[in-house]
Length: 308
Ligand code: TUI
Image (cartoon, rainbow, N blue to C red; front, side, top):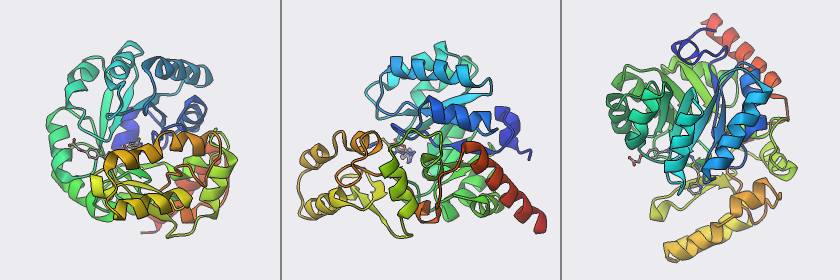
């Protein structure tokens, strides 16, 4: 399947893996890229040397292009930005902010820069600033989210910019991919479905929690202080939301979440840890290899797009 995104990024399948903190390390990214999609190493809050190591380890597994996601709230964002130039990373996605100050250095190093946007205004600003494409991410996503749904955001971003649009948020199979194409997308980005990939190093408890999740099992914490995070309900979200409702200050709420994502992903504490996942978790029913996931989605989407 050829689209503007497969041509731009030199990939076979217009499927991009989300840059999920703790989960998107070199095994997962390399497996997605080896299967023809675009694997992404999630720099999240990690130091720059970790990111460099992951890029190099991924390159030992596959020669296909691999990208890196820069989480712009990271204290290491400046150093990570520099490492990506030194390592000549072909594709850079960004999340949780405006990557404007890095655009020039990345572009002159020859990287394709693809910011995640949660609004039409930011999409327009990113295009003006030289973005090669944008990821329009709806509120169905896991983790840090915007307000607009994928169904409403993607066509509005499509109409507002000329660069290719990648749809994200709530997409978990070929039906979601075909729907995103109908809305004007040139590719899709999936997170939750890849968390449960065989190559994902995420703890089995976390994977099992996603596989058992139902449609309305996620909750959004942090709305009151402007850092909304979608995650699966557990003891932690229950306590957090109660405290948030009581007006407990931001600093105290933040203390509850320090290290909580790591506790869930690495140690498997899905009761007290943060189990970030998108609303599509309810659809995801089994662990598969990245190749199986990509082949299945591509086949489903191709059949649907042919029928119409
Ligand atoms: O970034 C994400 N998802 C994330 S980042 C993350 S790490 C984290 N962990 C705990 C607390 C806080 C962060 C977990 N999940 N997705 C991409 C994304 N970007 N979604 C929404 C946005 C976004 C929102 C506002 C991008 C730009 C933006 O603009 C604000 C501005 O500065 O203009």
